[in-house]
Each structure stands twice: as C-alpha cells, then as structure tokens.
Image 1 (cartoon, rainbow, N blue to C red):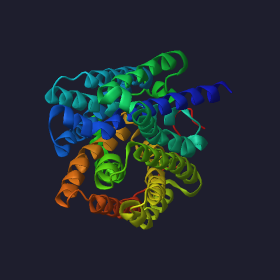
Image 2: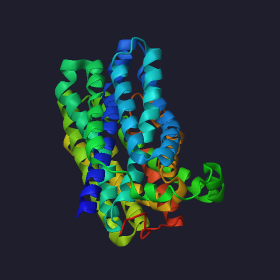
Image 3: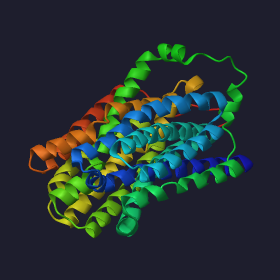
Image 4: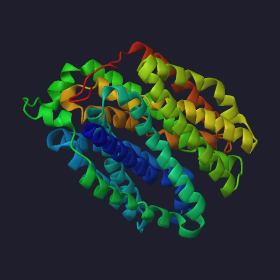
Length: 400
C-alpha cells in the first residue's frame, strides 16, 4: 500500500510538472502577434521565439538528463522546475527583442529537461501494469498545459497583456514544495548506484541503431504535434478566418479536451494491444480528419475537426512516455528518452516558421501548410512504428 501511495505521488508530480511546463510554453503561441507588435517585427520573425525554444530543448534534455542519471531524478526535477519558472518570469520583463529571444532560448533548455526526467522517474516508480494509462496521463499533461494557457489567455489576456501572462508563468515554482515534501526518489535509480558506471558515449555506441531510429521517430512525432498546434490559434483561426478572441478560445479549449482524452484512451489501449499497434491506429485515423480540420469554414466544424485531430495526435503521443522508457538503455534512462525526444524537437523546430512562411506565400491561407505537414507525418509515423520493436513487459527496478 505504501509503494502504491508513493507511486501515485510520483505520477501526480510528473503530470503537474509537464502540465505547468507546457503552460509556460504555450503562452507564447497565443501572444506572438502581440510580441511582434511590441517589438515592431512581423509574425514570421516573432515565431522564431518558438523555434529557439524548440531548438534548445535538446540541450536541456542532455544536461538535465545526465544530472538525473548521476544525482537522482528528484533533486534534478526540482531544480529544473525552478529554472523554467524563473525564465518565464524574466521573459515577461524583457526590454528588447534580442533579450526576449535569448530568454526564450534559455527557457527551451529548462523545458527540455523536465519531460525526460519526470517520465523516467515515473516509469521507474510505478507497477508495470500501470504504464499504459500513466503514459497517457503524463502526455496528457501537455494538452492540459495548453488548456491552462488557453484559459489564461481567454480570461486574463485582455487585462494582463502578453507580459503579464508570462509573469504568472512563474507560479509553477510552487510545485517544488510538493515534490520536496512528498515525492520519493526512483527505486530503479537507487538500485543502479551500486553498479559500475558506463560512459554515455559507450552506451550510445552500443545502441547506435536504436538511437538513430528513436531520433527520426521523435522528429516525425514533433512535426505531428507542433504542425497541428503552433500556428493553429493565431495564424489559422485569427488571421485566416478572422475569428474573435472568444471563438478562438472556445475552439482551443475544445481541441485540448480532445487531446487529453486521446492520450488517456490510446495510452490505456496500448497496455492491452501493444504500444506499436496503438500508435499506428491513432496516426492513421488522423488522415480522414484533415479535410474537416484544415478546410472547413464554420467555427463549429473547425472545432469538431480540431477535437478529432488532437484526439488522434495526442492519442499517438500518449503511448510515447512508456514506449521510449521501455526501449531506453537502462544505464542512461534519465537521459535517453528526453534527449531523443528533444533532439527530434530540434530537427522539427523550424515547423512554425515554415508554416507561417508557406501561409504568407498563399496570401495568409494556412490550410495547405497545416494539411501537408499533418498528412505526411501521420503516414511516416505509421511506417516507422511498424518497422520498430517494443518492450511492453519490461521490468524496471521494483516495478511489478
């Protein structure tokens, strides 16, 4: 019973950590047009702040992952949360475009560390039979953060402005108090402290094929998520369709609910039918949704299309925390899942700038940019997953 309670506390901490990290990230996609006006630049230039954050997440995954493998998941996760909260606050106070861009790059380093450390700590601390639905819950933290950002923008945006929204993004630092008081260290990490330490490059050399495969896979996954999210509220719904603040907020809330439900459903399903099969089903079911999602004109139809699209996108993503941790070499589990995930983010980081540039070329019609990215990567993910392997029944530490 005590082990179950401890596992539940770890799950809650990791879910909240990823939720609040995502909240801080997604504030940017709602306000980059306001940031552009403040600093006197165009939308494409302002969208570089998103690109910089995504680029630097790989650096953060490597730095914080290595620290977690050496010093433990728990203290590194606390430090990581303090870092991204402080950098979010400073972003709201940035006096110039250059300083803002630098802070968003540094925020990317801090954001890049949280997912890998939290996911490894969780998967090493819970019973094996929990992994599927907990994987979906953890990944649901991402759209949960997006939903919180949507609500903050919808309710407080007019009053606080973009700077105020960034400043309230410092609140996640309070989560450190809960972690310090309630969350135990990973039993798997403790168990490995008596074993000889192997240099990370040697481990990666031994698993070179797996590493390359995982990076390519996560590049496709990041194009799948960011290609369906980053420019959707402001460039597509506001600029292309001319929807007002309330309509954009309502549609964003709708598709984030779909994203959370999708992650939970397919994560749990993967425990029964397998990780690969669940991901392939979710990815391919996104294809028939594209016309409704990207080419409708009615806000009601767009909301329905967006709900279904994010149900499938985050449904596929909901399997990833478990799948990557199960595939990871155990000696570097604190580093490997987060690093390959965020390196994929790095390779997909040009997405927002690419899509806004394509939309500008077509007189601010972003439908083709959205549909093209979503359609191509859905097929690529299905193919890559079909070619891979899985280790659904792997035992980790004291998990049972």
